[in-house]
Image (cartoon, rainbow, N blue to C red; front, side, top):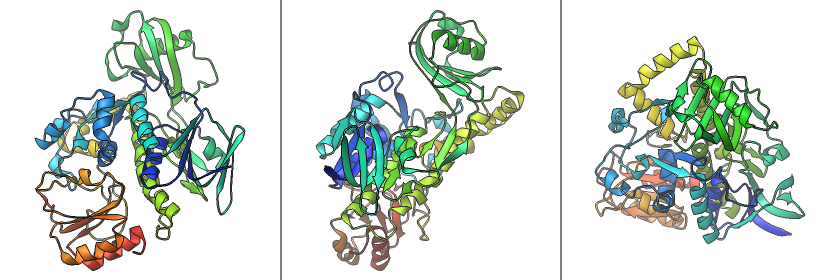
Length: 503
């Protein structure tokens, strides 16, 4: 029987990124994927097109993967020059189709803001993203086995036994990254709670006989529903407020899709042919915990919601970055007591907030006068500088702050991308997945103190272009600030022991 430190179920972006984080920390990792072939029209352009939030782009930037991901996605290669010139992002998203204008965002008012390539918009296909992460994972020694569906899972105090087909795999830990209908979640007995759907959604790639009958735009709200004409190539979406009545076991026929599209668009548009189609709902559910014994969940396996605003992928990327270093430290026996439990404590509230963000968008899209009135008010608020900035903070991840204790307001936030006088940046120093101690005064006592953690914390004495009023900053492997303040060796040692265990 093969044995691993961690078995991950699901080779989507979340599972692959988690595998990369664990591989970077020298854990033995096996990824099991049900689908035999990673190539799928649902993962390639245009159906697989997704937007990365600033927080997600930042995660790839910190691991040195942003340039290769931009290249794989066909994105323009002018980002470094753009953020060096402190140009605003070209796009920052929308709220239920209400587009947020980047020119209205008060970036200088964001908490501990410094220009970063992560602030610039980026569209990727799932195929490109998974290709980059697969190559990275394999290079780090991760094993990936496709066409392997998990059928059983048993755990005791020492290990987890995962059965897939005729094979069984033993691991010290197992993580379900296997999507909204997660087999791991069901087998491990996680409680999944939330709210029932308001609509049935559809996405399709079709030949439209008369596309001019459909308005272009992110979201077109009518008196009978919502539709999206996403591209001239026939990529369309629909929201039919039927309480989620369409049964996914039913076949999605051209006639059914045409009927729904005509109803929600208020036109007699004709679909000549449908090449690919799928349905979904806005059911918003979340597990009550992200850990049951030696089994953990990340991504859609832990939380599902409507795709409005494109938060699902980004929420899962945040889960993977938060969990990876904590699980690796636990595997290696260097984790302080309770470190793995902070995964649920930190990420569950973020997931709950995203579910509410999604529910709020559904509420103002309903085809009734009350929702229409509310949408008008929300639209006016989002059109202001404060409203746009708030929307950007929520959708980009800039508002995330974990409750890590401590008195400095930078603690618990994603670390600013400090730029140093030699033109390096914090993002250039985090590729190896270790923590980082930034010492802005080359304090001898800090240099001496950090030596005991040198295999887990990188010490950097440098002069920043803007120190944001702090003398030293301790940054966790996931890029969040564990401690900040004056150069105080005793305070650093306390924070290091709390997050990285005793030296």
